[in-house]
Image 1 (spheres, helix red, strand yellow):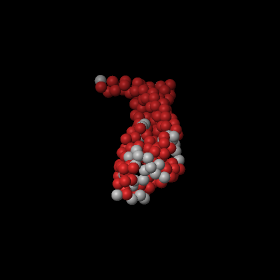
Image 2: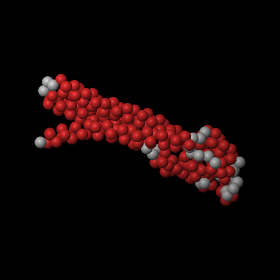
Image 3: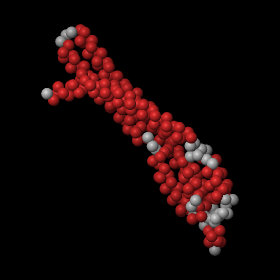
Image 4: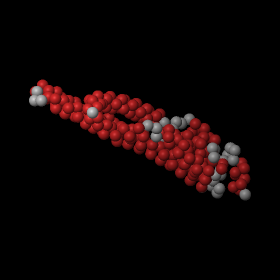
Length: 227
């Protein structure tokens, strides 16, 4: 009785797997497009930005550096601009804000990667599951064909259709895996940009006696440095 019920479920579930894979494919394509647009709109020339910010800092114009960063997009810019707000508090404060700023924004720029990674790893298995269910149904029909040539043709057709599920699973997985690897690299590049710009700022701060050289709002810090 239980086997009969499972066979009945298998007959329906084989096609359901295909619909699930197609739905997952649509979702993954949507995530991929959204993520590439997200990074494209926030792209910056990190090396040029770092040099420009350091030029402002060498002149003691921290507010000018922050105003310059206000004109730029990018997660890197947000982190560095926030860190510069702590510039008068010294080297360690800026370093901690940079590190914390990356962690606070990680969920935003890594959004969707977990889904793509999971889909890329498991879509072939979902397709294989659909193939197994289809073959089970085909063999059930084979048992009832009893040498009937027309029935045998239906069985062969059923097996061929069942194998489509595996092909669809692989087809769904490939773009997800490629996009996952590409977007992971973009996230790593973003973090490296923050670190490279941050290192330039920290090096500039260390080049001064106590890390303070502020033209606007840093009079007290400068007085402590001279003392």
